Image (cartoon, rainbow, N blue to C red; front, side, top):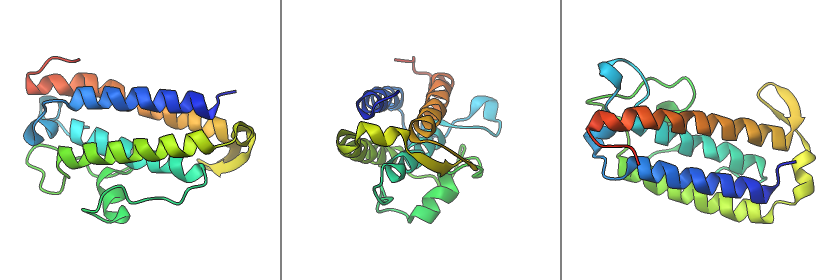
Length: 166
């Protein structure tokens, strides 16, 4: 069984990875997409993952928190949620990368708080998610895999700026 302590270590590692991939990237560079095609840019990936972390927080029993004061949760979901329109070069709706990194730090702080207080036995509790019932640790494993998938995309979009990967 995955413990809350394990999850906290995983999310802490991922936060560090996202910060490294975003280091010294400008706003314009964060909006670059591969070959100018419609696809995920660094800005969208980080915004999407910060937005998705609210699901982890919510399933820990903590009410969803607005991670930035710049937009409402509904506006954030519209920009960075599943099925949102791609963000790319010249986007005027995308949040500034520095704002997204503030959100990443804020959600990491909340994840640290909730994971250190989450009883290990709660990980076996059944929850309704993704259209079915499953143990909480299965949902967390799915969401962590989702985050890993998108972090892998950062390895391909960062070099668009001409900068090497960390």
